Image 1 (tube, rainbow, N blue to C red):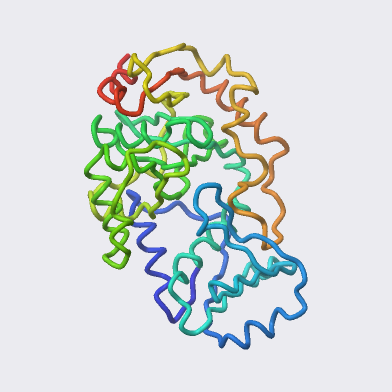
Image 2 (cartoon, one colour):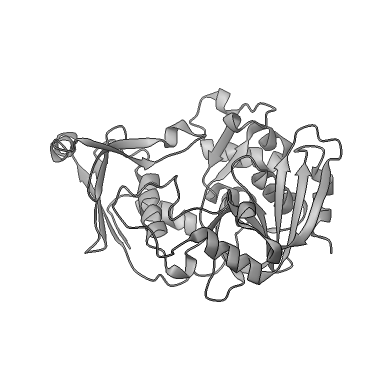
Length: 345
């Protein structure tokens, strides 16, 4: 629940609008209150904060490495002119925004709320996988793996070239209540510049995110598939530019574990086809988040979500689901024409 006199609610509305249907009822409510404050007030409020912590961390995007002084339940971001104070007992987050420093306020308010929702999620969603996901014929296919595994390439080709419906860009939650459904967790579109060039529609999405205010060189993309040459945009641009809405959840149909290999002569090579009933812990070690998501540190002091061992829980869940698991090697350019065959029985 957001209380603000500014435009922060618009960001929440745009993020929610990417999904089909109504949002499921929350297990608990966090009250978010946004206030204006003078710069001197913010500095005075944190004069005795001698610890340093992260609000958000990112391996690929330096502008998302946000840090500042912390105390239990709070963090100050001096470069952003924002102070966050969370009261667990009241389920209340107060955010103070320096006057005239509101350029990223609406986005960071959303990130703060999303961070808390992640840490406070129900035991029903204790396990989170590092995966993109699409819906084909009413069921979800997961593209599993860590950074650089090809999840985004498989996702965007499936949606733009294979007629799939988007479900998740980078993270999915396993539903322990029914033991068969996966749920989208709202995350950003992240693409290597070469992949953006491969899909003209993506160029339109990324250009729209610049909103005409960026220097011209940000509209130039290198033919590179390196992690150091990645771009990121909020997913609502994908919906607003291309008219594609995401599914919130779907029963699991199968998993693709891919490895990107530039210059792979076969384009796409199927290395193995097996069932998730035969999964081992080592198969999932790089794809299951631990008790927390390292990109979203617990600056608010919330304890880890309920769940003794997310890896063991995810492994048991997927073994019981017993769906197909495909191991493939994909060239990011040559492999695209054959990707649709992965989902043909």
